[in-house]
Amino acid sequence: MSRYETNVVLYRLKKDPAFRNRFRADPRGSLAGVELTDEERDAFVRWDARKLNELGGSLHLLISIPGLDGH
Image 1: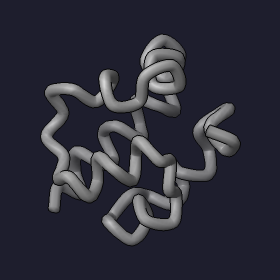
Image 2 (image 1 turned 120 degrees about the vertical axis):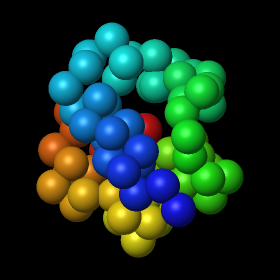
Image 3 (image 1 turned 135 degrees about the horizontal axis):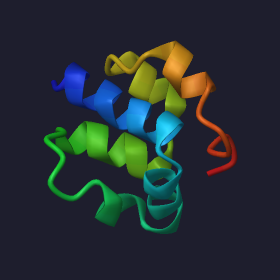
């Protein structure tokens, strides 16, 4: 499990509007090259916040990313 990378992606989604927009448009493509497990990558692509939290994603980051609640 890559808890650190999961939180790096969450932080980028929170702080980097360009990355967030790319993620909204193409979640899988925007994560290319990021060292995530298949399970983590799938949780991001489906925007499964509960699963991301179970996998070590910071709850604070998960609930503070603008505009992804309905992703």
